Length: 205
Image (cartoon, rainbow, N blue to C red; front, top):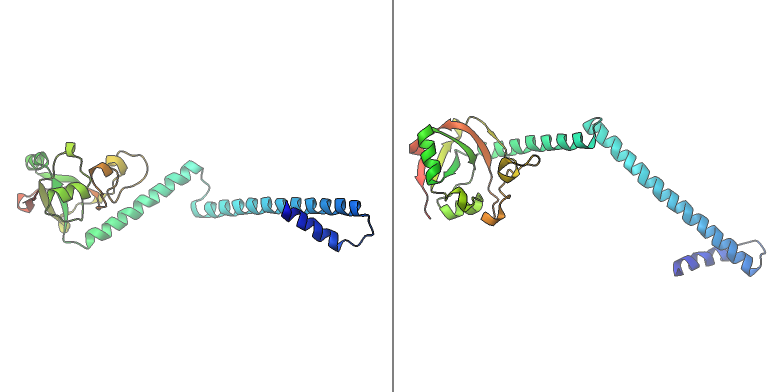
């Protein structure tokens, strides 16, 4: 209100018509109201223009899409980018690592193959693996490290969150199960490769 009165005073001060005080004040107040309306209209126009510019930008980048199609496309691009990111991390190493419970090892020996959640993180500690890879106790205690030569890999894919069950989003670093540990390890789904016992090492507690 003080700011509004000050603006009215300014209008009164520059008024040049020989009007009575009451008439001058009323005319000045009307002028201020008109200016406020103009400013509001300009603000609305600015917002509309900004929205139109944003829409034009998105259309030029993604084409004419619905909101759902645009989100799906963004999700697809994110998956490709994470795939490339993990690929670079793998290429910088001699081995990647699959950590197995006693049952996991037994199954791998039985089928002669290895696949599933794998990481670029090396560890000799079962507890460290469980915390970094966010392995819940009911999934089995990590007991073995399998070192898979990068030269033997047959491809991989980036996992979706929540055990690869989510329909959108990606989890190149473990974070879906904070109750199991702080996470933060790289993870990807290893395509099936031959299993070799010579690459298996027992973990410390």
